[in-house]
Each structure stands twice: as C-alpha cells, then as structure tokens.
Figure 1 (cartoon, helix red, strand yellow):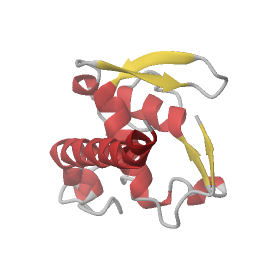
Figure 2 (figure 1 turned 180 degrees about the horizontal axis):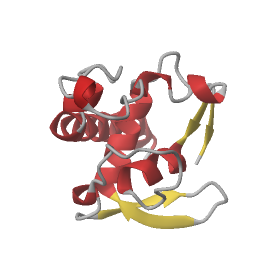
Figure 3 (figure 1 turned 30 degrees about the horizontal axis):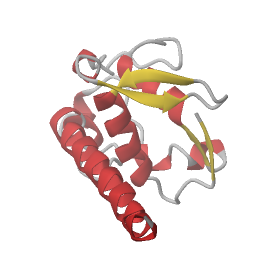
Length: 137
C-alpha cells in the first residue's frame, strides 16, 4: 500500500498535463485567430474587430493577482453576457456540448461543469504573466 502512494503525484501530474493539453487544443481551434498564439490579443483577425481582444495573459494581473475562474468561465460560455461589452466575442457553445466534470465552486459544493470549459480555463490560467497569486472560483 505504501508503494502505491508513491505513484499518486505522477497520476495527478498526468491528469493536469492532459487537461492543459486539451485546453491548448481548444484554444488553438477557437481563440488564436483573435487573441493570438500567446494570448496577447494580436491574432490575425484582431485589427478587424470593433472591440480589440484583450491580452489574456494579464487577466490575473488586472485583478491584482487573483485568477477569477468562474468569471472566465462565464465569459467563454456566454452565460453572463453582461460582464463587459464584448460585441465581437462569440459564445462557444461547443465548450458546453460534451462530458461533464466535477468542479468545486469555492464553498465546498461540487457541481458538474462541462469538461471542455474547464480544460480551456485551466489552459488560460497557464498563460498568466505573472502567475496568479490567489484564486477565486
């Protein structure tokens, strides 16, 4: 039994790398054209948009180091279109049409959330420069 515990960190690391890879693929398929490869808002379509795409690497920095997981999820899935004016930001319904994963909303309540939505939000977290210093769900 004690040897099994040695493998737990590797299992967790493998799962997070897999999630990040899935999120990166989703980002490349859906976001690069406007936000650019590095998420800085410099994609090929950016100049033609009415509202310039934000620098996605500074989401946490604009919030004093806080990574706002639920806010980012709401922007991507279109649930809360009143967050900020984003007339050129599409709603990504394909992020919602898949398997579900458990997500702790921050108060100990676990709820089911679309896996693709979690994947891309976790990937966006890896783009943060500087890295987040605190988290809110």
